[in-house]
Image (cartoon, rainbow, N blue to C red; front, side, top):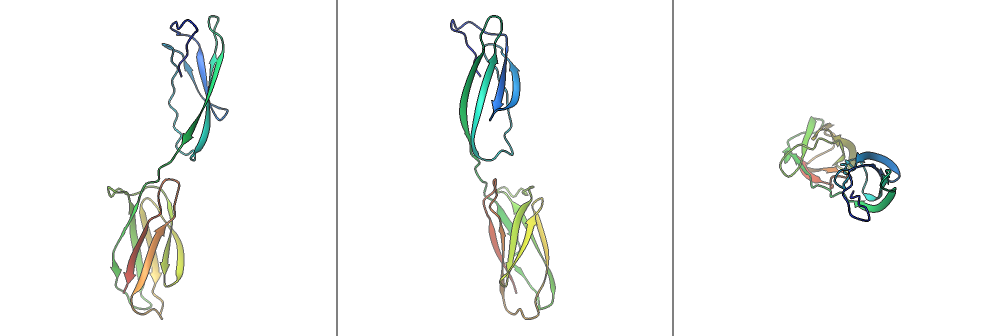
Length: 169
C-alpha cells in the first residue's frame, strides 16, 4: 500500500491495517510511504475478494481508507495415471490394481484425490492417497475374455480429471 500526503512528503509513521473481505489479515508500519504485507490465499476458493487498507493517522497525517477488488483464479493442473497395461487373471482369482498419480514431471501428487474404478459395468469408489492407489479385486466367476478397467479421478479445485484404461485378460 502506498501512503502519501498532499505535499508528497516522505511518510515514516503510522500503521496500515489490511482487511480481506472485512477480516483483518495484517498490520504493517509505514516506511518510505509504503506499508507491505504478504498474505497466502492457499485454501481460498477462486472468486472475487475485497481488500481494504486503513491508514490510522498520526498527529501529522489524517486517517485514510482505500478499497479494491481482486479476483483469485486457480489454474487446474494436468495429472497422469500410471499403471500396468494388462493384468493376466482367471475367474475367481484375486488381483491387485495398482496405480500412481503424477504430474508432468512424474512427481507423485501428494493430495488425496477421489477416484473410481469401473470394471464390467461395476463402479467402485476409491481414492489416490499420496499419489498411490491400490485396490484388490476378485475376478467374478462368470467373467470371460478381455475386460476393460477404467480408472478415473474426480475433477478437483487444483487438478483436472484424469482417466486411464487397462485390461484384465
